[in-house]
Image (tube, rainbow, N blue to C red):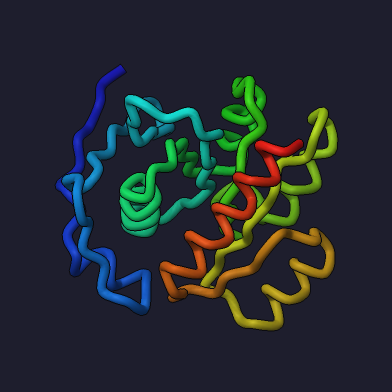
Length: 171
């Protein structure tokens, strides 16, 4: 399979998705490698459970992935719901899932409804640019750990991911 390397993430691209200006501190921005429609942010030395980002918008995925990777979280990225379900089925450890509500092949609700087949449902954090009513309706049905409406504060995202990671670690 042919891999495509995207340009490094810039602070300007990150601020499109977050309220605050984000400047990576100690590490350079993450590079994203796309292979067969599934991309992964590579992290060499992490014992944390992976964060699965199910997001069809490449720019949003790059910004979110870079921010999370700079915070020390290994990433898996799926552009469709089917790819996300496949990645979850291949993962040995329980993952934290950042889930967009509007995907090209299914809704975030449909994605989450297919999760009960797994031994433990992963903690869900819903992210969406949808109206507050759509996000609230999805949250009422899915009962995620958190719902974040784009654009959102990076500190809110990192706080919820840390809480979800702790739940995974404890469970």
